[in-house]
Figure (tube, helix red, strand yellow):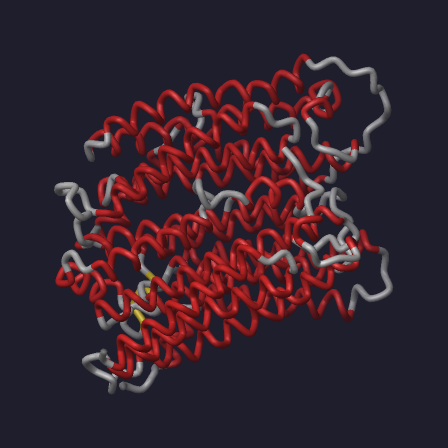
Amino acid sequence: MSSIDYLRLLQLAAPETFLTLTGLMVLAVDLIVGRGSAPGTRIILSGSVAATGCLLAAGGLFLLPVYGTFAAGMLVADPLTVLIKVSLVILTLFTVLLAFSDAAPLADPGEYFALLLFACVGMMFLTSAEDLLMVFLALEFTSLSLYILAAFNKQSPHSTEAGIKYFLFGSISAAFMLFGLSLVYGVTGSVQLPEVAAGLARAGNDPLALVALVMIAMGFGFKVAAVPFHLWAPDVYQGAPIPSAALIASGSKVASFFVFAKVVVIGFGGAPAAVGSGAAPVWVILLGIMAAVSMILGNLAALVQVSVRRLLAFSAIAHAGYMLLGILAGTEGFGPLVYYVITYGLATVGAFGVVSIVQARTGSDRLCDFAGFHRRFPVLAFCMLIFMLSLAGIPPLAGFFGKFYVFAAAVKAGSLALFILALATSTVSLFYYLQVLKQIYVGETADASHWEPVPITVSVALLAMAFGVTLLGCFPDLLLNRITIALRITGF
Amino acid sequence: MTPLQICLLISSLLFAIGLAGALTRRNAIIVLMGIELMLNAGNLNFIAFWRFGPNPEALTGIMFVIFSIGIAAAEAAVGLALIIALYRHYKTTDLDQINSMKG
């Protein structure tokens, strides 16, 4: 074993190190300066430190990226992972800004913001891992932070329930994943993705390899909330504090889908063909079924939801189905998938932001609580219009182009049946998104009580996200060109 | 039967017992114990594959296990904390009674 060049490690992991230090600083600031002040002051104090840290980290990543590989794929920084990391930090930044809202009275704002940053660090390590050990460690690091974030509101039984459900489902799937990884190690003798790919290709039709692939797919299927591993999602989205739910729905999904696609495309590329079913490798069949069921169940279940957060959860399950199409398309679908996931994350955080405003003022998130929102906050109602239509995939918003590129890649890859299903279910999804907008714009309500004004940070964050979704929709090349160039450099 | 096969049998059994415990028991703490068993089954696999594999001088397997033992400990800590929070609200750790959210 060669000695480790720590200076190089520090260079490559500078953004992660910086965010970790920021997280610790948030804790210290809240403890030293914020002690004894009002909760509102403490939120603003520690939140501004966290937001500044995110801004600096995103700026540093964007302006001064460092590329390289450390310890044979333990930590890979290339243009593609840097791009994903920038989007992760920006999504975390918006989540931090949402937490300024008074929706969830945070008992310990310092800890909350620090955990948000730690979760972001975990996701960043996850994106840059090309080694199954790092994938597992980063996945668990992210998950453990998110479990605590989901259960953070100790006053609310719903939040605790969301946390425990997320934790139990999450750790069972982590155990499946670990067992699957151990079998991969047994079959291939390595945990580095390129060598794993070679080993799996050598192994051919080894039943052990099949079991391993199924178990790993289960682990990732849980993280991205694809049916049949989605059971936690509605409860967590509904019960967790809103910024936590927003991060689970956006950042965690971006990172998990990216690494899922990387593991599948690089690692399983030469995976064994399914026994007796011709040429299609087993993971294609497996992911195809997961995608189809997610699209159908997610969209149909969302139709009957009363709680908007549950509705967003089922829509997230449906979107996971569409995103799986991108993974199925292989290398062809990688770029579209990245674009889709990032724009989806942006629109989802925005939608959760609007829900948090309503929930803080009415105490719940039922559809009928949104009635008259347009009269109270016309600009924010318009933001919600953009988010919902983008999620539904209406041009010229970003969601449309995401779906368009992913579906096009799926057709090119030859999964025509899934494409038709996606198109059909996508039409169904328009109904429930419009249901929300209908309440906002034409819903009748007798409640004429005065609503407190929205905190400035939340409005700014929502406007920025709405602007981002529109901009990326009108000029998809802004992001897509970067992704394509990054993919070419990375060699996909 | 080779030693590797015996180890794999034991670990598969351990995994199955853990999974059965996690899925059938209603007490959150016993579910947590089941999950720990499942994680340890994975660890046992790694050790077995490392020890009886083609190149035991590369320390990949044992390194993975050391890290995953750490992860399992962290998971137990978070899990127990969550269970305590749960108990404060519901005065029970029976998972069947924790269903306040319906859709």
